[in-house]
Image (cartoon, rainbow, N blue to C red; front, side, top):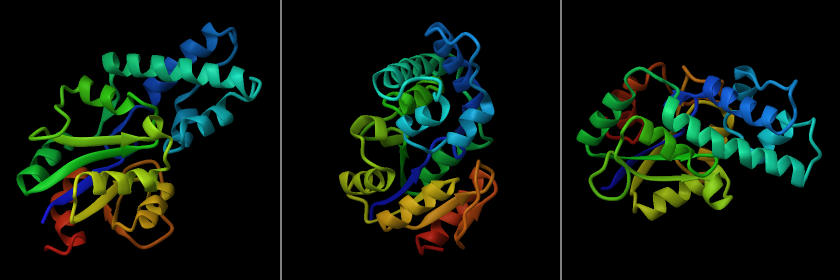
Length: 220
């Protein structure tokens, strides 16, 4: 059997909110909104949403449409550049856990609602090999690449990689909802940004996956 563990990004693998806020503030002020500051809290409360919805929440001082879209794209592009250089706050044990899961026979993937290039910025900052074959993270997908919702991208990753069994690891309710819609079991990263209103498998540290993944996939 080909088994996979599909990861969310923000609140699951790292917290990039502080540096995203810094990057967005630079572009917002460069665009002429000198008194506007994007805060870490602004970013955190929007983590997990598609980028256009984040812009609708944060850029109410712009006209909806071309003006707001242009500012959003500028922020997205600079955010990727900024994170490639400055990174974010990596949760303890992330890469040790990914390597251990791979050694246990699981294939590792990432699916996020982020813009195109964001997952790559994360992987490149930490020097993580990714792509088909023997690399640590074998495939990635995001809303920014194809404008598909998270449940569709979770299914896409599972189908594209011929997975017989897989689970999704995320931290907020919309992650759970998308995973349920995709028909896969969910593991709640309880150390992240949100709570889940249903009973589900939980982890309090990413290293807990070594025990929880086999349980969730019926192998324990």
